[in-house]
Length: 299
Image 1 (cartoon, helix red, strand yellow):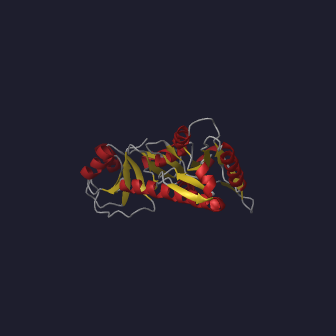
Image 2: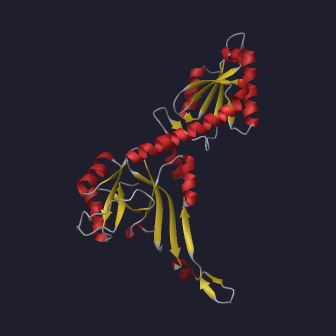
């Protein structure tokens, strides 16, 4: 679970962790834990699972180990699942109206260099652009020089749609001032960067972009996760607005399924490590709640 958390935190993908209800537990598992994020339409998307299989499969398939004393025992097993849907989660968490917006850590190209030559000044611009590419590549950055015969605006649009975190523009004025004009993909902000400090500044800006993307994604995610003490509040959130509702639950399967039916959502299960829910009573049977659970429409 800690590895999963580190993985998703690096990607800036927000999540909740739940223990799935008994009727949504992986077949043959003692219990299932899952990570869920939210798609832009407000539906929950499962992005990672951990299943405690205990010794159930070992007994069926005769999987044993020999202890130091020579006695044989059935093995304990766990099962883990992360798939390419995490790529979709990254796209959904950070994309905007322009297109893809990738965290620098996983962007195939972290910075694209766009030379802006003017007549009779092409050579110096191209030379500096090539030198900058070599300098950044040597420093370990994934960098690309776009020297295609296209207008600069067309190049900007091309790379913005593909989510490249940082654009570095080099024109005659930049050459004269010994600077580079940097444009951050997430905010569109332009910055003049001294040529000598470029490597350090590129790293600083990439770290800043990663932090901004993470912070923005978590802010939007938390805004869509609300406490609901009754069914009407939960229904309003899940059915009408799209999001995740926190509800008290007595633990009975019949009540859990009734909550799903009434809210039009799926019970993700008991939240682990999240905000404690004031337990109160179950919204179905009015018995004292044993736990707080999360409910959302899910893919």
